[in-house]
Figure 1: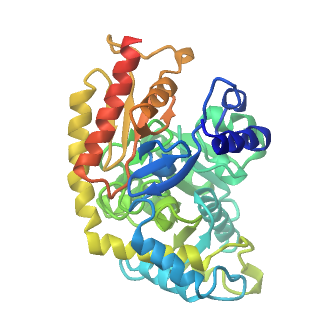
Figure 2 (figure 1 turned 180 degrees about the vertical axis):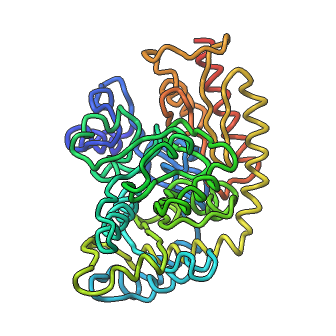
Length: 424
């Protein structure tokens, strides 16, 4: 290990606190964290000069690859003008342009308003607060309950955490949050008192943190019909699935569903800048007009011009590079290779999203204390692949720009990591 790496890691162990990380294990003298210093395309390099395939798109954010010339140029053009201006009582050109572009993905007047924030959790927080305030100012104050799905994940701020169904993340905070009912499917939803419900939130097509659980086809459409019949607002969390990840620009488009609120982040700025958006309808927006109905929510970096400029350039790349067609082609290849390479394991895919649930030869789960997912992902580093597990499900979520050769590299690296652990 070179001297510079040692110094950076010493400062990290002494002063830094990493998310979703056992800090005791992280700081163990026998563990070598990777200090990532450079990226190009689908590849990342650490401070020791080792190259890795970015197998989870830098926590599901990277769309077109690292250091993309068009995205870099967009950032530089905006930096030559101004990096940030307040959005509280002011406007900026890039935010206006981006809002118009986002609304244009949907039928006229369907989702016509965009509220900017910083990340997926705050995008969800906005939608929830809007849904509740809407009821207060439209004569339905009794509609205070929210509904989410078992094993859902919608972020870590307190409101979003209330909607989380993964007990290890949220159970200790449950008593501090909002009233939420959890259901497994639409049938359970029908058994609830709809007149007390403000909104239901749902991850369309696939639940990410629930080990890449893929929903049955048609469930999203069924949920929309129930919301229409009951007057309950539909909030779709497309923080992970938005911007081409499932093969369409937004997952909800695969079942021709338009929600009342659409939460976007991650791929919105192509993995470059913290930026999020909550989209909603003109009807909902109009109820917030007037001094008595102001939506008192916002962030210092709301509608950051630099992030908006990069997001606009990202949308241009989708059109120029025909990205969605590439996703459809490569997702079929990735699924085929995964099923060939890992016949004893459970494979779940949706577009360029894959979960490989590791199983023993007899098909049974590994004992939790073995932490097999962690071990396999750690071993994968030695074969040039970076990713993270969710329990014993290894996530493979490559950048959308990955070519066939790069995807094959990632799948074969994962295969080598699994073989290594089978023989050890």
